[in-house]
Image 1 (cartoon, one colour):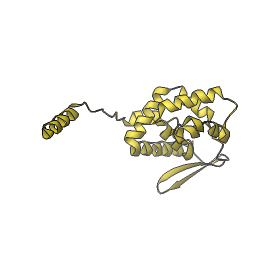
Image 2 (cartoon, rainbow, N blue to C red):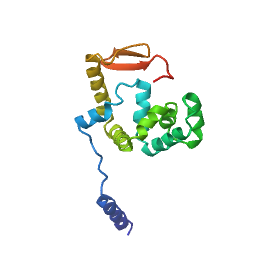
Image 3 (cartoon, one colour):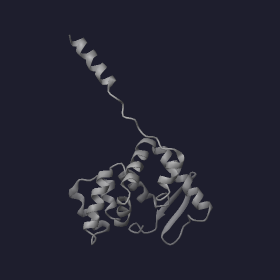
Image 4 (cartoon, one colour):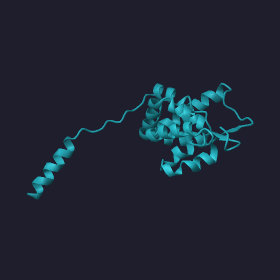
Length: 164
């Protein structure tokens, strides 16, 4: 009897429809990542991870809009009670970034899915976009950011952590 129940359970589980993961094409990734590829690495990393929590991003954007007097570390401390993922909470420091993300929830969801399902491809695409921008003179070090090449990767680091 136990064997029959186990066999029935296995059959039912195998018959359940598998949830398909959407894989994005290179042109879709290029389009999706172009708006953020030149952001400093620490911010870019937080955006990519936060996008895997699109509902929390929407909540954080609403919170930010309701609390325009808070930004930076003060805003990050203020959102701690909400229990959002650390990447989402860190974006409270950048209300302009959250506002842009809130303008396109579909883009945030797609970005999160792409990052979750195709992380290496997403990161390679960022590097390709950075190479193109650097070759055309649109990505270089200045007073606000340091751009450098290391191990065939282009890094973008802010000179001042609190400024994007």
